[in-house]
Image 1: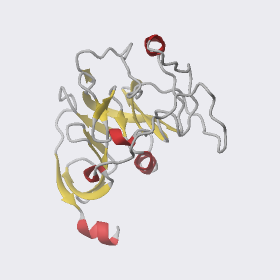
Image 2 (image 1 turned 180 degrees about the vertical axis):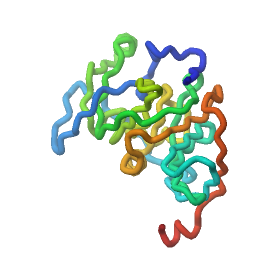
Image 3 (image 1 turned 90 degrees about the vertical axis):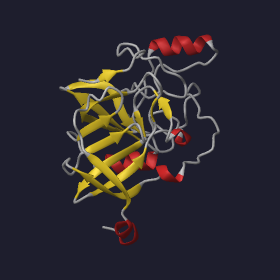
Length: 230
C-alpha cells in the first residue's frame, strides 16, 4: 500500500498555485487555435532553464526489473524507463515537497493527452481569500498545470490521485514542489507517454520504503548509444 507522509490527507490535499499536481479531470483535447477563457490561470513569466543533469539521457542502468518498467527515484529526482540489457532512458523530474512524499508499486491505469484540471473546492476557497481567482475547471492546453500529457497511477484497480504529468513550469524540474505527483518537462512526458502503455508497472522509491525491494544502479551516460543511437 502507498504510505503518505504526515500532513497529506488523501481526501483533501493542500495545494498551492505552484503545485497544482495532485488532481486532474478526465482528458480533454486542446483546440488548435482556441482562445483561452479569461478565467484561466495564466503562467507566470519565469525562466525556462533546466539544469543539464535533468535533461533526458540514455544511460546504463543495471537492474533486475523487466524491460518496460518505470522506476522513479524521488530522492535524486530521476525517472527511468527500463529498456533491458542494462539500458534505460533517464528523465529529470519534479517531486512532492516536504510532507507530500510517498512510495509504492503502482500501475498506469489511464492516460490522457492535454488533460483538463479540476482544482478542489478547498483550494479555490483558500486562494480566493488571497485574491487569486481559480476556475472550477480548466481545459487542457499550454496554460494548464498538468501540461501536455498525464498518466494516472492506480493501485489495486483504484486511482491513487497521483499522476505522472507534464508541466508549464519547467524550472521546477529537479525540485520538491508538487503535492505528490511526478512532474516532467512537456517534451519528456510526451516521450514517455508514447512508450509506457496502460498497465505499465511503476515503482516509486521515496519516504516510507513501501516499494519493497528494488535493485538498480545508474552507471551514467551510455556513450555509444548517445553517439550512434540504438
